[in-house]
Image (cartoon, rainbow, N blue to C red):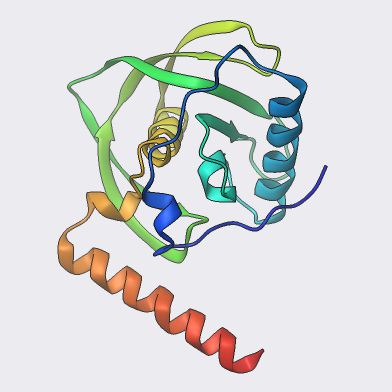
Amino acid sequence: MAIRPILTAPDLRLKQKSAPVEGGVTDEHRALMDDMLETMYEAPGIGLAAIQVGVPLRIIVMDLAREGEEKQPRYFVNPEILWASEETQPYEEGCLSVPDFYDEVERPARVKLRYLNYKGEQIEEDAEGLFAVCIQHEMDHLEGVLFIDHLSRLKRENALRKLKKARKEAALQA
């Protein structure tokens, strides 16, 4: 397993649409998911899409265990939302690809999804609460959408300006 660099906005690779995994889940895909999980834990975060480590495949890892709880890694290959509730809920989101910026995003409160797990088995399940928020956030990445794209133009531009400033300051200190 290896920790991979996480792409940050405004890297254009984050805007590309990820390709479906063809031919089932292979050992190569599992190795990628293991690396992604290790990268996510190190960051630290609760979800990571493959495109965030530069791999444009429809793969997501997630762990919603709270600090002090036993880890509960989850794997989603080719996830798709089959149904979303009309009821929405606001949730303050952050993103490893938009570091140190948080804002409220309104999303469907519940979704039904289908995906392949780590073993390649097809799963259908309902998601609500933080799970629903996180899976929708990560699935947006697969479509080239960042959570800041759901915000007003002014808030989005502010976030990108902060990122560029932080990047310049880091470069000057290096």
